[in-house]
Amino acid sequence: MSTAIAKTGGAGFSLQPQNVTEAMQMAEMLSKSQMIPKNYQNKPQDTLVAMMMGSELGLHPIQALQNIAVINGKPSIYGDAMLALVQNHSAFGGIQESFDEAAQVATCIVWRKNGEKHTVTFSQADAKQAELWAKAGPWTQYPKRMMTFRARGFALRDQFADALAGLISREEAEDMPERDMGSAQRHEKPKEVTAIEYYPADQFDANFPKWEAAIQAGKTTPQKMIDLVVTKGALTEAQENQLKSIERVAA
Image (cartoon, rainbow, N blue to C red):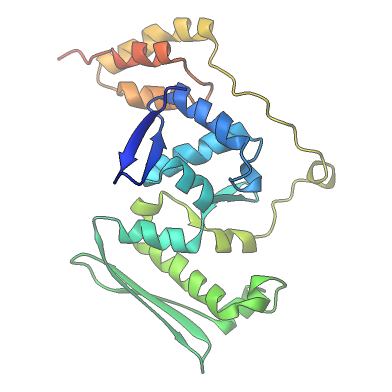
């Protein structure tokens, strides 16, 4: 694998794939590791998607796998990682969090630079109404922290949707009811993923002329076209370079 290695301060390194082929190779390798969360082990496709989503958020591949979780089929991010992403956003103005022990209310105030402060609260009453209070698990063990995470998640999503790309907090995702998949499907053994499928070469050759025309006309860009095509199948490095070489024709 020819993945580029970027040195960081002489004390370590980070791996950053330079194209889809290298990303797939990395996903295959990482999915076989015991060092990543179990929900990604032996699932190279899920691993690749998490890495791609993490890349959009500014997370390195390992950071993405450690902080992005798929709950009931919906991607989500851990509450602390959500806060870190927002704090690293160029428009971040500040955040204040507090908890009223007497009233059992968590408060999160967040604001963008030169913007008004946005306040969100989440109380014991809110948790009871949502049928979360005394729910087995974290809501019973750490109710204060769960209320804090819920207030934080709502506030950050309200003000920094651009930084979070639509992700909700993992804690919120876990509290959502499981989608009704039907009893047969719910107990069906998941199929094992053995390899990532490539985009058929004959279809690539057949579609290339219209992709080229769209890029030359300025309707899209080579990278956007690549991002669209790989949702249907992986591209080889040669195919990627073929698309990247197309230039817009001046009007």
